[in-house]
Length: 446
Image (cartoon, rainbow, N blue to C red; front, side, top):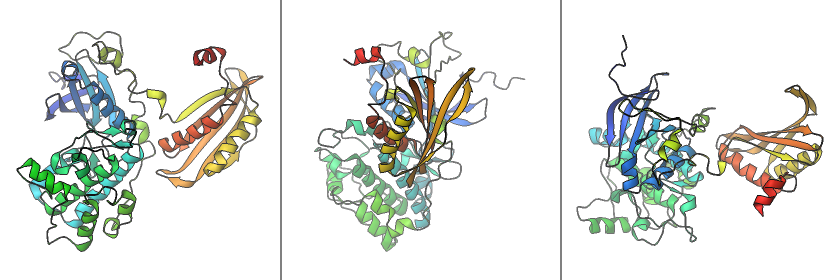
């Protein structure tokens, strides 16, 4: 008996109940019929996306979620498209919203609130290190997984560092009024990191008190309270909690506590557990942009196009370059050079050593690739200083593919992908004189 009969399917996902609905999208529970994994699928109507000019917002949300790969941030699995809809497949947080927990059970014990706050700060700190500012942090956008771990979601209002103006500030007023920082309201520009931190402080207050620190039925009175940081901590809070809240909910962003300072705060540090990154955690969403075309039972048969070609059939909605903008965050890269292997290796050493890398070289060896003998020299680089995911390790291999031509492969062997990207930017800028550029590309560059 076919148990899936009558149930709606999108590609390999069987759709279930609606778990959230807004003006432009709805989120449905679904299950991967191949693995049994539960997921959440955000379904957007292309016609509405175009009508209400939401293209850039969707691009930003997906690009941001692809960039952020952290155990306390909801993971994006893939993006698919049909002729009329966009489907964003997300990790499903089975524990629901943190907001519901507060509504149903009221304030929390300090140890429990502290654990959620620690995970929130871990996630926000990571986002900021990627140049991503959430701008709408609130309990409704904080989900819980089956183990009760916090997951930051909904990056629809997030800002990337590229959106910062020449004055170094963001200028779009957005977010939920009760959680918005004073500097966001004064319309003179604000730093995304300190504004996010204010919202984190409001969330901590709500977890500990069971109510909002700034609330008023009159919006102007509410803004005045926020602007002057006019709030009172409940008597049952410990001195450490009150002191940290006062440091975060400080009206002047230039003297507000920073995340590095929070990480050293005595109240915060109690029972602190740093985030644990699984070895392949980041890899799960690096290939989000693989080609997908899907069809729904009620729609026409699909044309042989990938998801982004289908999406872009509507004028003005081209998501085709969403996942390979500058190919920025690859874990490996290659280039060719007419320099000798020794010159290439020496140049890489000259760049890597000042950046704090230990270098291990291996002698030449010969490999047979497609019946051809290929000379190869290997070098491993390891950063002495530990990064976000331990010590960055980089494997470098130089292949002689012709008498006067070498191919160089540089790949991340271990550590953080963004740290590898920063290393490679330093490396590539220093290797310009050894990288071979074809005559065609030289002509294009003129």
